[in-house]
Length: 358
Image 1 (cartoon, rainbow, N blue to C red):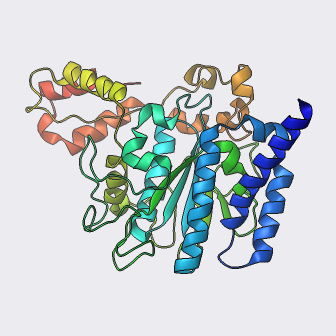
Image 2 (cartoon, rainbow, N blue to C red):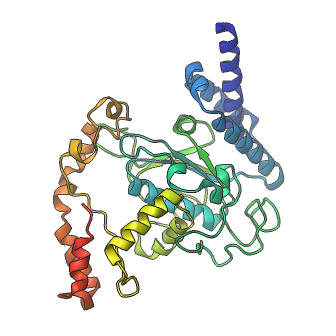
Image 3 (cartoon, rainbow, N blue to C red):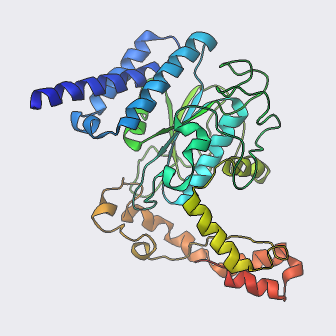
Protein backbone atom coordinates (compact mmCIF):
# COMPACT_ATOMS: atom_id res chain seq x y z
CA UNK A 1 0.00 0.00 0.00
CA UNK A 2 1.01 3.62 -0.38
CA UNK A 3 1.07 4.03 3.39
CA UNK A 4 3.52 1.15 3.86
CA UNK A 5 5.58 2.37 0.94
CA UNK A 6 5.92 5.79 2.57
CA UNK A 7 6.86 4.32 5.95
CA UNK A 8 9.48 2.07 4.33
CA UNK A 9 10.96 4.97 2.35
CA UNK A 10 11.15 7.11 5.48
CA UNK A 11 12.91 4.32 7.39
CA UNK A 12 15.41 3.78 4.58
CA UNK A 13 16.14 7.51 4.28
CA UNK A 14 16.57 7.83 8.03
CA UNK A 15 19.00 4.91 8.22
CA UNK A 16 21.08 6.07 5.27
CA UNK A 17 21.20 9.70 6.38
CA UNK A 18 22.16 8.62 9.86
CA UNK A 19 25.15 6.96 8.20
CA UNK A 20 26.02 10.18 6.36
CA UNK A 21 25.75 12.11 9.62
CA UNK A 22 27.88 9.69 11.62
CA UNK A 23 30.68 9.83 9.06
CA UNK A 24 30.60 13.64 8.98
CA UNK A 25 32.39 14.43 12.23
CA UNK A 26 34.50 12.84 14.92
CA UNK A 27 32.75 14.46 17.88
CA UNK A 28 30.58 17.41 16.79
CA UNK A 29 26.94 16.39 17.29
CA UNK A 30 25.71 19.60 15.66
CA UNK A 31 27.74 18.89 12.53
CA UNK A 32 26.45 15.30 12.44
CA UNK A 33 22.86 16.53 12.66
CA UNK A 34 23.46 19.12 9.94
CA UNK A 35 24.90 16.51 7.57
CA UNK A 36 22.00 14.13 8.24
CA UNK A 37 19.50 16.93 7.58
CA UNK A 38 21.20 17.84 4.30
CA UNK A 39 21.09 14.19 3.30
CA UNK A 40 17.34 13.90 3.99
CA UNK A 41 16.70 17.00 1.88
CA UNK A 42 18.73 15.57 -1.04
CA UNK A 43 17.43 11.98 -0.96
CA UNK A 44 13.91 11.50 -2.31
CA UNK A 45 11.60 8.67 -1.26
CA UNK A 46 11.72 7.24 -4.78
CA UNK A 47 15.53 7.21 -4.86
CA UNK A 48 15.64 5.51 -1.46
CA UNK A 49 13.23 2.77 -2.55
CA UNK A 50 15.26 2.08 -5.71
CA UNK A 51 18.53 1.46 -3.88
CA UNK A 52 19.62 -2.20 -3.73
CA UNK A 53 19.81 -4.05 -0.42
CA UNK A 54 23.60 -4.18 -0.65
CA UNK A 55 23.73 -0.38 -0.49
CA UNK A 56 22.00 -0.39 2.88
CA UNK A 57 24.23 -3.17 4.21
CA UNK A 58 27.42 -1.33 3.22
CA UNK A 59 26.05 1.96 4.59
CA UNK A 60 25.16 0.44 7.96
CA UNK A 61 28.52 -1.28 8.34
CA UNK A 62 30.36 1.88 7.33
CA UNK A 63 28.40 3.98 9.83
CA UNK A 64 29.20 1.53 12.64
CA UNK A 65 32.87 1.45 11.67
CA UNK A 66 33.06 5.26 11.59
CA UNK A 67 31.45 5.57 15.01
CA UNK A 68 33.71 2.88 16.49
CA UNK A 69 36.92 4.40 15.12
CA UNK A 70 35.92 7.87 16.31
CA UNK A 71 35.40 6.45 19.81
CA UNK A 72 38.58 4.37 19.85
CA UNK A 73 40.95 6.41 17.70
CA UNK A 74 39.53 9.92 17.81
CA UNK A 75 39.11 10.11 14.04
CA UNK A 76 37.75 8.42 10.92
CA UNK A 77 40.18 8.96 8.05
CA UNK A 78 38.68 8.20 4.64
CA UNK A 79 38.81 9.15 0.99
CA UNK A 80 35.63 8.70 -1.07
CA UNK A 81 36.15 8.50 -4.84
CA UNK A 82 33.46 8.79 -7.49
CA UNK A 83 35.32 7.35 -10.49
CA UNK A 84 34.15 8.80 -13.80
CA UNK A 85 34.27 8.22 -17.59
CA UNK A 86 35.85 5.18 -19.28
CA UNK A 87 37.66 2.21 -17.78
CA UNK A 88 41.21 3.59 -17.99
CA UNK A 89 40.06 6.98 -16.65
CA UNK A 90 38.41 5.30 -13.69
CA UNK A 91 41.37 3.06 -13.00
CA UNK A 92 43.91 5.88 -12.86
CA UNK A 93 41.70 7.81 -10.43
CA UNK A 94 41.19 4.65 -8.38
CA UNK A 95 44.90 3.79 -8.39
CA UNK A 96 45.87 7.18 -6.95
CA UNK A 97 43.11 7.14 -4.30
CA UNK A 98 43.99 3.55 -3.38
CA UNK A 99 47.71 4.38 -3.16
CA UNK A 100 47.04 7.33 -0.83
CA UNK A 101 44.77 5.24 1.42
CA UNK A 102 47.42 2.52 1.47
CA UNK A 103 50.19 4.95 2.39
CA UNK A 104 48.21 6.71 5.12
CA UNK A 105 46.10 3.91 6.59
CA UNK A 106 42.79 5.38 5.42
CA UNK A 107 39.50 3.80 4.43
CA UNK A 108 38.59 4.01 0.73
CA UNK A 109 34.99 4.40 -0.45
CA UNK A 110 34.60 3.68 -4.16
CA UNK A 111 31.60 4.73 -6.23
CA UNK A 112 31.61 3.00 -9.63
CA UNK A 113 28.40 3.85 -11.46
CA UNK A 114 27.83 2.19 -14.86
CA UNK A 115 27.05 4.66 -17.62
CA UNK A 116 27.50 5.09 -21.36
CA UNK A 117 31.29 5.44 -20.94
CA UNK A 118 31.74 2.26 -18.90
CA UNK A 119 28.66 0.06 -18.87
CA UNK A 120 29.94 -2.65 -16.52
CA UNK A 121 29.79 -2.79 -12.76
CA UNK A 122 33.05 -2.99 -10.81
CA UNK A 123 32.24 -6.54 -9.71
CA UNK A 124 31.86 -7.64 -13.33
CA UNK A 125 35.50 -6.73 -13.93
CA UNK A 126 37.28 -7.42 -10.64
CA UNK A 127 36.89 -10.02 -7.92
CA UNK A 128 35.44 -8.07 -5.01
CA UNK A 129 35.99 -11.04 -2.70
CA UNK A 130 39.73 -10.36 -2.94
CA UNK A 131 38.95 -6.78 -1.88
CA UNK A 132 37.20 -7.81 1.31
CA UNK A 133 33.86 -8.05 -0.46
CA UNK A 134 33.66 -4.27 -0.68
CA UNK A 135 32.38 -4.33 2.91
CA UNK A 136 35.29 -2.66 4.64
CA UNK A 137 37.68 -5.56 5.18
CA UNK A 138 41.34 -5.17 4.26
CA UNK A 139 41.99 -6.43 0.70
CA UNK A 140 44.01 -9.58 0.10
CA UNK A 141 47.60 -8.99 -0.96
CA UNK A 142 47.77 -11.26 -4.00
CA UNK A 143 46.55 -10.69 -7.56
CA UNK A 144 46.73 -12.41 -10.92
CA UNK A 145 49.19 -9.65 -11.93
CA UNK A 146 51.45 -9.87 -8.89
CA UNK A 147 51.54 -9.11 -5.20
CA UNK A 148 50.33 -5.85 -3.74
CA UNK A 149 53.68 -4.22 -3.14
CA UNK A 150 52.47 -0.72 -2.33
CA UNK A 151 54.38 -0.72 0.94
CA UNK A 152 57.18 -2.71 2.45
CA UNK A 153 55.02 -4.20 5.16
CA UNK A 154 52.22 -5.34 2.87
CA UNK A 155 50.74 -8.61 4.02
CA UNK A 156 52.85 -8.77 7.19
CA UNK A 157 51.41 -8.82 10.72
CA UNK A 158 48.08 -7.38 9.61
CA UNK A 159 44.79 -8.16 11.25
CA UNK A 160 41.47 -8.25 9.46
CA UNK A 161 40.90 -4.56 10.14
CA UNK A 162 43.91 -3.67 7.99
CA UNK A 163 46.13 -2.05 10.59
CA UNK A 164 48.74 -3.29 13.01
CA UNK A 165 47.73 -3.62 16.63
CA UNK A 166 44.00 -2.88 16.15
CA UNK A 167 41.76 -0.47 14.31
CA UNK A 168 43.92 2.60 14.89
CA UNK A 169 46.81 2.98 12.46
CA UNK A 170 50.16 2.22 14.07
CA UNK A 171 53.65 2.89 12.81
CA UNK A 172 53.01 0.86 9.66
CA UNK A 173 50.31 1.87 7.18
CA UNK A 174 47.95 -0.06 5.03
CA UNK A 175 44.58 0.48 3.38
CA UNK A 176 42.15 -0.07 6.26
CA UNK A 177 39.19 -1.15 4.20
CA UNK A 178 37.54 -0.83 0.79
CA UNK A 179 33.84 0.04 0.64
CA UNK A 180 31.84 -0.22 -2.60
CA UNK A 181 28.88 2.16 -2.82
CA UNK A 182 26.72 3.15 -5.77
CA UNK A 183 26.55 6.63 -7.20
CA UNK A 184 23.24 7.55 -5.56
CA UNK A 185 24.77 7.24 -2.10
CA UNK A 186 28.04 8.81 -3.18
CA UNK A 187 26.16 11.92 -4.29
CA UNK A 188 25.01 12.49 -0.70
CA UNK A 189 28.60 13.22 0.35
CA UNK A 190 29.13 16.00 -2.15
CA UNK A 191 27.88 18.88 -0.02
CA UNK A 192 27.44 17.16 3.32
CA UNK A 193 28.79 18.93 6.37
CA UNK A 194 32.09 17.56 7.62
CA UNK A 195 33.33 16.42 4.20
CA UNK A 196 35.82 18.25 1.98
CA UNK A 197 34.69 17.98 -1.64
CA UNK A 198 36.92 18.21 -4.71
CA UNK A 199 35.69 18.02 -8.29
CA UNK A 200 38.17 17.30 -11.09
CA UNK A 201 35.47 17.11 -13.78
CA UNK A 202 36.35 20.48 -15.27
CA UNK A 203 34.77 20.47 -18.74
CA UNK A 204 32.77 22.79 -20.97
CA UNK A 205 29.21 22.83 -19.68
CA UNK A 206 30.16 21.14 -16.40
CA UNK A 207 30.21 22.31 -12.81
CA UNK A 208 31.68 25.87 -12.73
CA UNK A 209 33.25 25.02 -9.38
CA UNK A 210 35.21 22.07 -10.77
CA UNK A 211 38.99 22.46 -10.75
CA UNK A 212 41.12 19.86 -12.48
CA UNK A 213 44.16 18.85 -10.41
CA UNK A 214 43.17 21.08 -7.47
CA UNK A 215 45.58 20.40 -4.63
CA UNK A 216 44.07 18.21 -1.90
CA UNK A 217 45.63 18.80 1.51
CA UNK A 218 45.53 15.24 2.81
CA UNK A 219 47.72 16.24 5.78
CA UNK A 220 44.90 18.35 7.25
CA UNK A 221 41.69 16.78 5.93
CA UNK A 222 40.21 13.61 7.44
CA UNK A 223 37.21 13.08 5.15
CA UNK A 224 37.81 13.76 1.46
CA UNK A 225 35.36 13.25 -1.39
CA UNK A 226 36.56 13.48 -5.02
CA UNK A 227 34.84 13.15 -8.40
CA UNK A 228 37.49 12.42 -10.99
CA UNK A 229 38.50 10.71 -14.21
CA UNK A 230 42.13 11.77 -13.65
CA UNK A 231 44.99 10.97 -11.32
CA UNK A 232 44.68 12.82 -8.03
CA UNK A 233 47.00 15.51 -6.71
CA UNK A 234 47.59 15.39 -2.96
CA UNK A 235 49.91 17.48 -0.82
CA UNK A 236 51.79 14.33 0.20
CA UNK A 237 51.74 12.62 -3.22
CA UNK A 238 51.24 14.15 -6.66
CA UNK A 239 50.18 11.13 -8.65
CA UNK A 240 50.72 12.93 -11.95
CA UNK A 241 54.48 12.68 -11.41
CA UNK A 242 56.52 9.74 -12.78
CA UNK A 243 58.12 8.94 -9.42
CA UNK A 244 54.68 8.03 -8.05
CA UNK A 245 53.99 5.47 -10.79
CA UNK A 246 55.25 2.51 -8.69
CA UNK A 247 52.63 3.27 -6.04
CA UNK A 248 49.88 3.42 -8.65
CA UNK A 249 51.11 0.25 -10.33
CA UNK A 250 51.08 -1.57 -6.98
CA UNK A 251 47.52 -0.39 -6.39
CA UNK A 252 46.38 -1.66 -9.79
CA UNK A 253 48.11 -4.99 -9.23
CA UNK A 254 46.08 -5.44 -6.07
CA UNK A 255 42.99 -5.80 -8.28
CA UNK A 256 42.19 -9.37 -9.32
CA UNK A 257 40.26 -9.63 -12.60
CA UNK A 258 37.29 -12.01 -12.68
CA UNK A 259 37.74 -15.24 -14.62
CA UNK A 260 35.94 -13.95 -17.74
CA UNK A 261 38.36 -11.00 -17.97
CA UNK A 262 41.37 -13.25 -17.36
CA UNK A 263 40.30 -15.41 -20.29
CA UNK A 264 40.24 -12.35 -22.55
CA UNK A 265 43.75 -11.41 -21.40
CA UNK A 266 45.03 -14.94 -21.95
CA UNK A 267 43.54 -15.07 -25.46
CA UNK A 268 45.13 -11.71 -26.31
CA UNK A 269 48.52 -12.89 -25.00
CA UNK A 270 48.28 -16.08 -27.01
CA UNK A 271 47.32 -14.19 -30.17
CA UNK A 272 50.09 -11.60 -29.85
CA UNK A 273 52.89 -13.78 -28.49
CA UNK A 274 52.00 -17.25 -29.70
CA UNK A 275 54.44 -19.88 -28.48
CA UNK A 276 57.19 -17.26 -28.08
CA UNK A 277 55.96 -15.79 -24.80
CA UNK A 278 59.49 -15.81 -23.38
CA UNK A 279 60.99 -14.05 -26.39
CA UNK A 280 58.81 -10.96 -26.55
CA UNK A 281 57.87 -8.30 -24.02
CA UNK A 282 54.24 -7.24 -24.29
CA UNK A 283 53.43 -3.53 -24.13
CA UNK A 284 49.80 -2.47 -24.19
CA UNK A 285 48.80 0.95 -25.52
CA UNK A 286 45.14 1.93 -25.67
CA UNK A 287 45.10 4.86 -28.11
CA UNK A 288 42.00 7.05 -28.30
CA UNK A 289 42.30 9.07 -31.54
CA UNK A 290 38.72 9.23 -32.84
CA UNK A 291 37.33 12.76 -32.84
CA UNK A 292 33.72 11.73 -33.58
CA UNK A 293 32.40 11.21 -30.04
CA UNK A 294 29.17 9.58 -31.22
CA UNK A 295 31.27 6.89 -32.88
CA UNK A 296 33.88 6.64 -30.13
CA UNK A 297 31.29 6.34 -27.33
CA UNK A 298 28.35 4.40 -28.80
CA UNK A 299 25.09 5.53 -27.29
CA UNK A 300 26.30 8.88 -25.94
CA UNK A 301 23.81 10.72 -28.15
CA UNK A 302 21.01 8.19 -27.52
CA UNK A 303 18.56 8.15 -24.60
CA UNK A 304 20.95 6.42 -22.17
CA UNK A 305 23.71 8.85 -23.06
CA UNK A 306 21.41 11.81 -22.38
CA UNK A 307 20.90 10.59 -18.82
CA UNK A 308 24.58 10.97 -17.88
CA UNK A 309 25.62 14.05 -15.95
CA UNK A 310 26.56 17.30 -17.67
CA UNK A 311 30.28 16.54 -17.33
CA UNK A 312 29.94 13.25 -19.25
CA UNK A 313 27.47 13.98 -22.06
CA UNK A 314 28.08 14.58 -25.76
CA UNK A 315 28.41 18.37 -25.44
CA UNK A 316 30.97 18.09 -22.66
CA UNK A 317 32.98 15.42 -24.49
CA UNK A 318 33.43 17.70 -27.51
CA UNK A 319 35.97 19.60 -25.43
CA UNK A 320 38.48 16.76 -25.78
CA UNK A 321 38.47 16.82 -29.60
CA UNK A 322 41.64 19.00 -29.85
CA UNK A 323 43.52 16.53 -27.64
CA UNK A 324 42.30 13.62 -29.77
CA UNK A 325 43.52 15.40 -32.90
CA UNK A 326 47.01 15.54 -31.39
CA UNK A 327 46.85 11.92 -30.25
CA UNK A 328 47.80 9.54 -33.07
CA UNK A 329 49.11 6.00 -32.97
CA UNK A 330 52.20 7.06 -34.94
CA UNK A 331 53.37 9.07 -31.93
CA UNK A 332 53.13 6.01 -29.71
CA UNK A 333 55.07 3.88 -32.19
CA UNK A 334 57.85 6.48 -32.30
CA UNK A 335 58.01 6.58 -28.51
CA UNK A 336 58.13 2.79 -28.23
CA UNK A 337 60.91 2.68 -30.81
CA UNK A 338 62.87 5.06 -28.60
CA UNK A 339 62.19 2.99 -25.48
CA UNK A 340 62.92 -0.33 -27.21
CA UNK A 341 65.82 0.43 -29.60
CA UNK A 342 66.74 -3.26 -29.90
CA UNK A 343 63.37 -3.94 -31.53
CA UNK A 344 63.74 -1.25 -34.20
CA UNK A 345 63.74 -2.75 -37.66
CA UNK A 346 63.10 -6.25 -36.37
CA UNK A 347 60.15 -8.58 -36.45
CA UNK A 348 59.48 -7.51 -32.88
CA UNK A 349 58.38 -4.06 -34.07
CA UNK A 350 56.18 -5.67 -36.70
CA UNK A 351 54.55 -7.67 -33.94
CA UNK A 352 54.15 -4.43 -31.99
CA UNK A 353 52.31 -2.79 -34.88
CA UNK A 354 50.08 -5.84 -35.26
CA UNK A 355 49.11 -5.61 -31.62
CA UNK A 356 48.10 -1.94 -31.59
CA UNK A 357 44.45 -1.49 -30.60
CA UNK A 358 42.67 1.68 -31.74
